[in-house]
Length: 181
Image 1 (cartoon, rainbow, N blue to C red):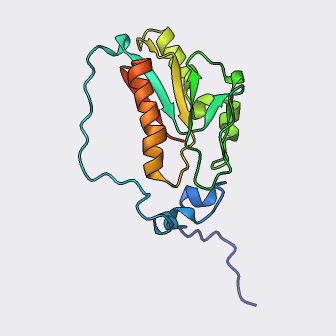
Image 2: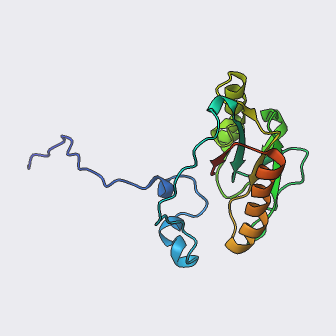
Image 3: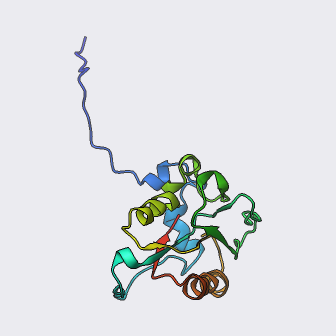
């Protein structure tokens, strides 16, 4: 009878891409997205200089902009079913509480964010920073939209331009904090 080695023979397993093992809606999406939608992947080929603050941080007003799809429960829901995406955005009052907000999004799992909105839309953390005087204050409104869309030109002329205009002209923010979902 041959001896059987019951010891552990561990072999190194290859690293696994967490996007492929998580709860994303379509496994295998990441390696093929640029093949399916040419030009949709963002790449950075040129240096983009950071703008210098004109005032100290504790004197600046901050505006949050997020692609997470959060809005007030009393707002019109976003269109999560349209195959090209929703080309609207919502104003979220910077003083809003979590129990007044909802994440209207189907393209990513948001169970953790439903428990603590700050996971994806750090509204309470920004309120705290303003309260502590670390930042000068918050703009009256923050902005949110659904990041999924299949028409970048339309997105640019509707959502991106609309938010940029509102942040600069209406909110007069010194700093825009971008929080992608």
